[in-house]
Length: 135
Image (cartoon, rainbow, N blue to C red; front, top):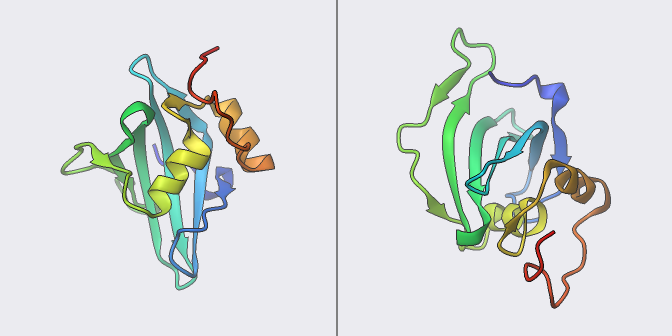
């Protein structure tokens, strides 16, 4: 089910094209036993553009997958993605920034609580041992 727009939190991403903003639905954030972070993401444009997607990010491989797209106002507001294959987040852009600064700490997935903290306080500064110790 597509979450309501007013339940999303703003995600400050510098690498989005001008006039676009990103929003993450924190209540939908989960980390599975497969260590994939799953979440709803919405990208909105000043001109009225709207892109909602249910995605997963595999931090250890720097990859993401789109499972479904959301279309508010339609009779069937969620449609499965045609090609839900894994894609690299290596190319400079907002997905790389989202992965590195919000969803993951090195090769490890962040919990919903950690992601909420990043959105409230900004990404923590890198440390030489990030990703080395797992608690």
